[in-house]
Amino acid sequence: MITGSIGMLPSASLGAKGGMYEPIHGSAPDIAGQDVANPLATILSVAMMLRYSCAMEKEARRIEAAVKEVLGAGFRTKNIHREGTTCVGTAAMGNEVAKRLKHI
Image (cartoon, rainbow, N blue to C red; front, side, top):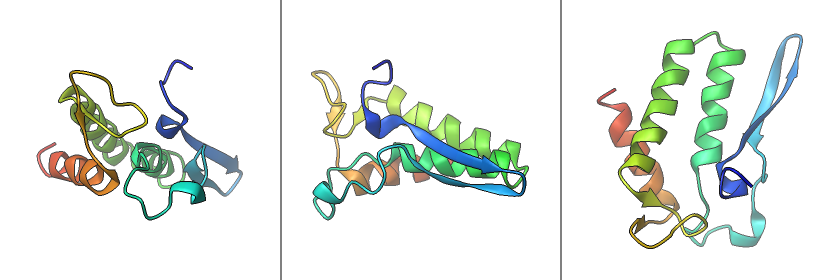
């Protein structure tokens, strides 16, 4: 898989009047409450929602840029962690994205 993990894939089911947005992996109930889920697909699904249902291209690009910066800084959740990167939990990954959104 090119993305490295299913946890990186946002998705959309689009209709004439909007859509439904979610990470391709769904809610991942098998790891719920363990602080190990990768939140980036969910975050990127929000970017898709802003772009396709809300016509908020600028805001969608800001979210995508924040995710790119976090990954560029070497932060990874367990599912995509490798030597030389910083392994963080779900909450910490979300916080890293939120911090960058404030400055983009």
